[in-house]
Image (cartoon, rainbow, N blue to C red; front, side, top):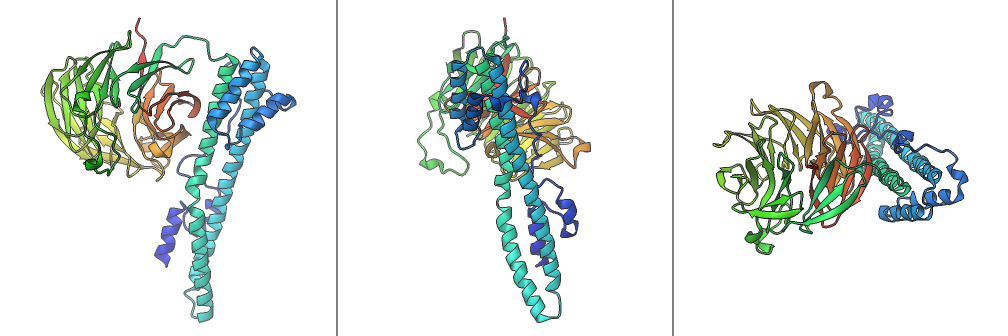
Length: 517
């Protein structure tokens, strides 16, 4: 019985019941509790207006759009309609934004307080269970039987409650994301987001549509589409920002464990790397010679491409003109391909073998080592020339790899609801990671001083965020949310959602590229 109780307490993120008073003050969710929304969330030039309730139309609109039962796109549409009906009425947009802050912020605070109360009740129940267990050791048969019955009942209640925790823990993030989306819609309706000219553009591959969305990060709108080919996924820009290299594939979409004999035949004529001229947004050519490419990287000097060939288990090294240099066996189902800052090292993650291949040698590339990592590694993110972070989707880990020693030097375990997909370094020891089905972008400190609390921030971005890119100045993150058919924009300093851009066709990869004159 004691071993069973220990497992229950561990599952609840609780220490021993003797520390119940301490437990009552802790936050039980795997992600940090969100910071309460405040006036700093408003856009530049907007001011918090506590009198928003006095504006009957604004108050009625807020009451209509804040409940989570109203789909987010419908709430945004109502804000857009309000903007068309009240052009130029700046104070009213201040009131609308202020009402959103107060209403959704209050609900979020209530949910957070409820989660803390839940944790307090679980701690008290754990203490009672421990006491009941102690009574089962008495010599009085009646006392022992009664204690055993109480313990069985309390255990069932404890387990039933604990199953609710992952659902409850998602709600504060969902509310924060909804607030960010509605504030961004309010800013756009006010006309305040139209100023300035973007110094870069955002490109998102739409796997099902066979197109690339071109997004202006200032106006937060899709401004163009590029027809690219079947199943565009990974993409990378040339060092001079003039060309885009996109992995396209004629292989049918298949999730993990799917029996490929039940799938339609692959269209190998569609496989290759599409080369796009970013000035004209036209495909110049298709580089062939690679089967079912998934992700692609470019050498620092812009002369070589490194392509993960998923169905052959190889890394294909070719010139940017399409001449093959090498084929390297890197493991089953290779996916992520990354080049070190100095260009000397290439990493390739293998989904099927749960490993990462370390490749060096320039024009004579060789696999120098393979390192075991988490289950189903999707990408690799260099922190510097000698260290890289590798997310493991299936075991919810992010591993820090020492590339010189070819070994793992740290493992961060996330909550079971998070499925880490794409990692991007943000400077120093920090990375941000999309969590797929977890729906979040999370920030992790992989430094030695952060071992106790490595997760330093989280924001709900949408349905199954996968691809991830940072703005050139590192202030914003963009996530491609496949089933949601949108790209989320996150302010990294505050880790909050500041906008969404609708796309179509299941966005997979995302990239930011500076404009070239």
